[in-house]
Image (cartoon, rainbow, N blue to C red; front, side):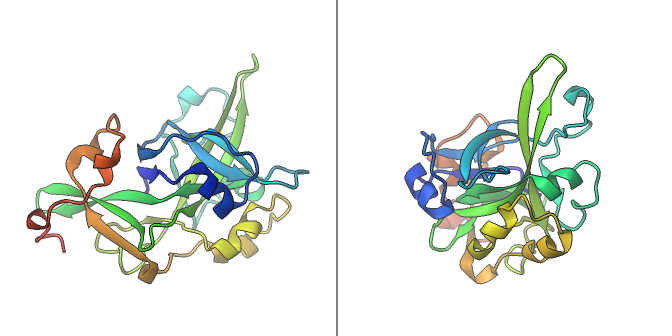
Length: 232
């Protein structure tokens, strides 16, 4: 599962990394939570340029009559089954996106408590989580565009922390993943694999991140060494 992440990288650096043209102001985020508006990069049909958009985190399929009837926020979709699940399969075929991030959180079970940890690249660079997006419209014209993040089995680095991890795409796969004309699941499935563990790292952070109201640099600040002994 991926339920919180950060995106503090300046937007001009994101534009360079993910090759979108419409640069807009983005506030640094340190504790992005479900139901909030999140930045995604997508390529619309008949468009030649990637665009940055702000979508609700929590997928609402186009065929749902009333979003309030959904029993879950659908913030994640399993990469292994998303192509077949009614909730995700249409978006999987036609509406895929990149979800830029520069780190994400998981909670490691330590005795009777869960210790939050921050996971990122060793070089601090932003990366793209594979996402799906949807366009929902009510009968009176209200529009909600939403997204979900794909997850897969963890690599060896993260397996002791959680049994799932977000699908982090290799940059060489961005073009194929975003192509709206590519609808063959057999060509997309190989892209959805655990990311290289040697390029990643993690460290414990304080419990501040547990509250989504906290969205500041303190959320990603590592615990002092004397509080990390049992975790490393």
